[in-house]
Length: 306
Image (cartoon, rainbow, N blue to C red; front, side, top):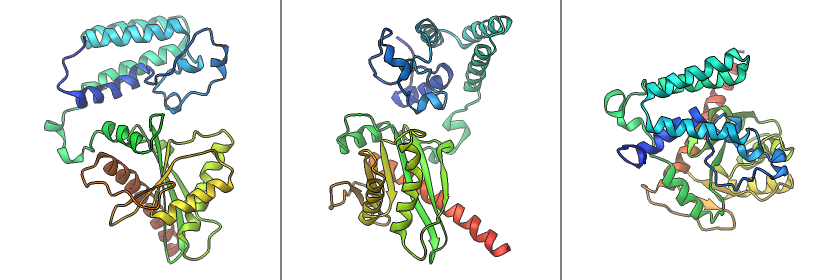
């Protein structure tokens, strides 16, 4: 119906941009317009990062959402110039009617569509090795590995860094749909642990991060990934138990052997070097490690200067 596209990978890359432009939903929730409980439903994080209009929570009326989908279909079937002309007309009409929020929405769509032409191609603009593998397959396999009935969309990675217990810090990184969401990154200066005790530091970071989720101020991730081995995973489990947290999936990935530990298992998984799941978890782990190390070096430098 739409196209042509060179392959599934190209199509997925385009859909990521189109979702930012048109903010259509990608979930499979059964939404009923006559359900009064919708207004009390809490939408997923895609609404918070402005990549979905959240019809699931009645954040947008059905006629307006239908118009978005018609615009998306028109974009896929038409030349960009036609769509841009229509969007500029809609923006002018909204501005003339003093509907400035709607006008701003059309303005943002226009800018994102125009930016599509400036994206470049891997062959012409960048070295191919800077591209991470498409995480779609990894997320599907990870869901099967965790035996999860729901998609694994939000992964949070936790790590700590210190030298002989000094200037100890922790980090938390957030990945959405297999890609870094840097606005969700957090740094922690360890406050309650003295000396070298990585397990206790992991526990402190977990407690400080997820107390906000318990209050309903943050979303729970689909998976918490700890940098470390079985002992680090158990420390995170115990910390969540002490918080009386709801069931949350936890895993850990150890360096060197790259063993992956899951809850209720003492024997690690040994995935192949080319496994999409292993590569994704390594990506999350390495990013958490990078953020922790960077913050640790900042604090060390400040201490040396003072």
